[in-house]
Image 1 (cartoon, rainbow, N blue to C red):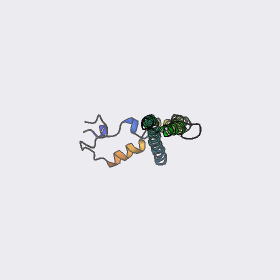
Image 2: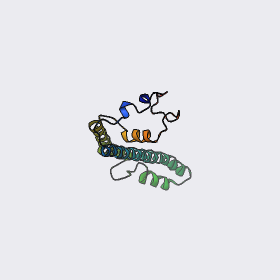
Image 3: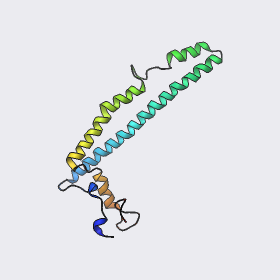
Image 4: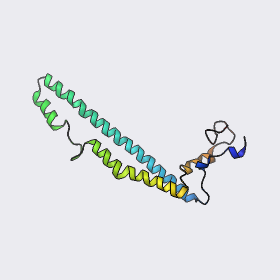
Amino acid sequence: MNAQHDGPDRAHQRPEGLSDTTVEALGALSKALEMTERARGRLYDFHQLTGGADLELDRAVRLLREAGQPEWAEKVRTEILGRNVIPGHWTFQIVEAYNDTYYEPFKALEKSAVDELADGRDHLYEAEMKEARRTAGHPAHTARPDSP
């Protein structure tokens, strides 16, 4: 295999003059955004689980009525069914506020940092880690998907 075809593609090569510290900082920024993506996923879990629980309350209300417990059916219906999870908010409003207030600005800032500091080359820290850890010439350690 030709050595010049056995390395990362241009999109994953450090631009000239970019310091180790800047590459490391961009890697930390990317990792923080990835953690935020995971937190956002948990927020969607919260949203869907809470919504599913609220829908299941319809069944509980119906069954309490069928069981001859209309006062308990009415308590569940009026006290819990459709209740705000925090004052003035259903979960969809929390998700929207998180996205608008934190997630989207964070995502935009991280992209701007990569664009400005690294000429738009994403995952440089990881690409350099891959290069340092792979065994050149090994078929399961190729540098790129299109490597022979």
